[in-house]
Amino acid sequence: MGGSDQPPVGNPTIRTIAMPADTNPAGDIFGGWLMSQMDLAAGTVAAYTSGGRSATIAVEGMIFHRPVKVGDEVSLYASLIKIGKTSMTIHVDAWRRPREARFSEKVTEANFVFVALDTAGKPIPIQSQPTPA
Image (cartoon, rainbow, N blue to C red; front, side, top):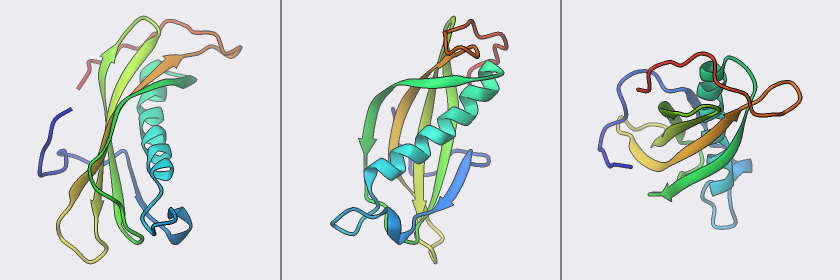
């Protein structure tokens, strides 16, 4: 996982606003809320890649670089980095932009591992195999 001072090129997978209900006791946005947003972004890529149902089985290397504040626009960029027989690894970067600011900064990053599942919840081979980004 590398550092960059600019968000990835292209549109984010998800863009949302951090709200007061998402704060921790210190008044910053709760890390669990941010992780759930990242999981949703990774899940979007996993569903597209597997062509169906999938589930998160691991989160690797979660790094919280900076806090997110109430009112920040949070942009999540998810990209497929590895495909196995039944699993996919998806890297997610989270960026914050203060509401009136023109700059963004990376706040969190992690790799999410998903497994493709059949309707009974059993792992299945990934049929569509897009090229990792």
